[in-house]
Image (cartoon, rainbow, N blue to C red):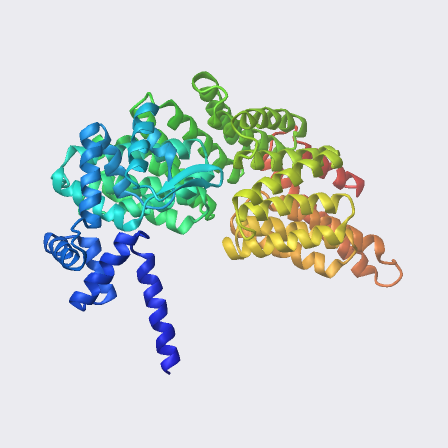
Length: 574
């Protein structure tokens, strides 16, 4: 028992030391104070955080008695801050911003958004001069810096006092707008590495409830909701976006542009969660706001693109293509070669891929890839487009090129996301389909089973993406001649598609028709004439259902209509 108590004491001591600055002055000051006052370790840390006048005075008195030295950490830091601000008044908002963020891994580029580069260089010179920065490094190739948590607490306490910071202080609004605008810029650039850093920064910022006006809090929440959406935490995204929407819409005239943006991303969340009708309504509401207040071309262009993606999910490919092309026109006119331009080209290309126009899909996706690569070779967007493009080359029969692109896509994806991420699942599924196409069934099955595991965990067993992977696995078993396993997977996928009234159900029906035609061809007529004809009749019924769906959703000259009609004709059906 005594050993256990010693071990527990060591853990508490280590935790205590981790929470005070690692300088001899701070360690000795803490030791003198603890010995003189008998306060607990937790009590001392609470004093450090609150830093009232009495605590500072007691520290000075104890230090003087112990060492004839009265400069405490609080006194040193506050004096340093005063000297820095006296050097240049423009440092005030920058220091305040640093004090409101998470003290660890603050992106340097965030400060660059606050002023000119010479001002930022000067600030860093002074911060280093007074040893206020404890670490400068790179986080996933992004320059970051950190300050000690207690140093940050002291800085904020000092700034609160000297700047008389209250919720209505214009400086607090100015700093919040700087942070919010930077987050919006990073989201629009689809910069996932920065988004991951900004998530912890935003969470820390929101914890300063006593300093943030409600409008600022809700604006920041909406931005964090967008980041959660991109990082695939859809439940958190929905929560943050809906909470901010309820509050910002109360002052609609002032916040209309933010409301439009929230509705757009909330629509995407519902689309990803499988509720396309709800998503469509939200996107149409967003677009009506952009129409009511014209001038925000990029917001309007992105909302049109997302609505096009939703119509594609609903199986209205003509409407989807029209909206995507309208969005593309906006980007071509107002934001040529931007991330948004590359993004809309990729979705238009993917739409042509779904329509069966593989060559047009390839052209658009190549254009998208070229633009994305101008921004970065390792962009998440590059990974997405490589996946679509690899699938297009698979459909065109160029399996070597397809494999090269799909493997590149997976490599980039793994640089940004863990192995259990939905984007990894998507890359694995593309590769699985390719290996099935070239007859490497074991490899294909391994890849798709891993993809299925991620999809079921992340989305659920009845999600559209799960249905797609089940269909692919069923097709592999079909190619291997394992009829019962194939039918189980294909029927399961069909049930999910039909449950969601999803037009992609035609593919599961077509695969099931192929399965029953294979059964028909393998059954000797003499054994069981009735069973023999049942297999063929069932195959024909599946083909008729598939044809009915593609005729309702695809253009008259669609390759899917032609293919299914040919299958029926080959069975003597006109």
